Image 1 (cartoon, rainbow, N blue to C red):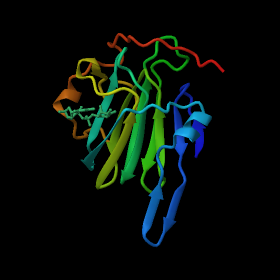
Image 2: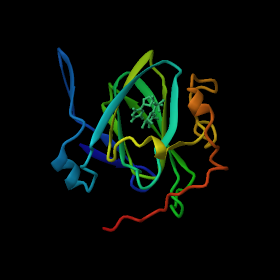
Image 3: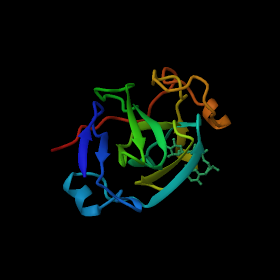
Image 4: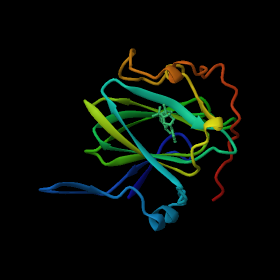
Length: 185
Ligand SMILES: Cc1cn([C@H]2C[C@H](O)[C@@H](COP(=O)(O)OP(=O)(O)O[C@H]3O[C@@H](C)C(=O)[C@@H](O)[C@H]3O)O2)c(=O)[nH]c1=O
């Protein structure tokens, strides 16, 4: 596994080993020892996936403290444009976004620290997106940011989104509870 840093501190693209043969692909998305050796989170008590069709946009989502979490996102089938926005007050990249092109073909993952909003857009006909999170789902602590309020260059201006996702505050109106803590090395 190779770690590619982004401009957002603590947020990485993970390049995974993709084993291809005549049957298809094999990809390992998590290995505790390897993650620990890179000082990445290793405690993931919950994993889930979603299946979506083309032009669907999910997000931007996060859980607020004390239920905030590290989130790892992997596209196991299809292709997505994945995006995060830094909401940590005091972060050198507060309010800035990062975009990842995640696909089953590439076999890459986004590693997202607590305090970032996350969402994605389905480029392929369908896509299967898998997650691991470091705290379990806490509906009372679930919040979001309006998908088109952070200048993310989404491939569509008219995506299919849930009613819930149409009602979130804009980045400009959002009062963030997250505080940036620089990593100690
Ligand atoms: C996220 C989540 C949802 N649910 C339920 C709530 C609801 O009835 C149904 C669908 O939830 P949502 O509409 O929030 O699903 P969705 O919009 O796909 O939510 C996801 O969006 C992306 C961008 C993320 O980053 C994920 O962490 C997650 O928030 O599943 C759980 O039971 N556990 C969970 O962890």
